[in-house]
Length: 53
Image: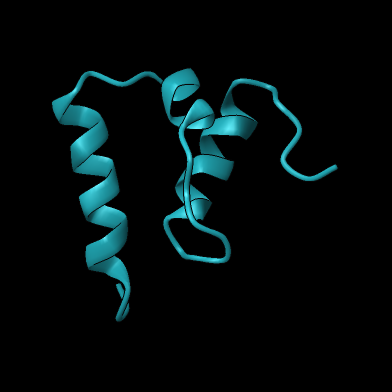
């Protein structure tokens, strides 16, 4: 998976534990630039929000 897999898994399991929806993840704040930000961008794409302006 890669050296940063742990940070992505941590964000995803946190979202699952709190019952977060894709919209919840899309509205959350992530540091930039980091790999977990990709999770937010995927959630934004899933709910039809613009990823980059």
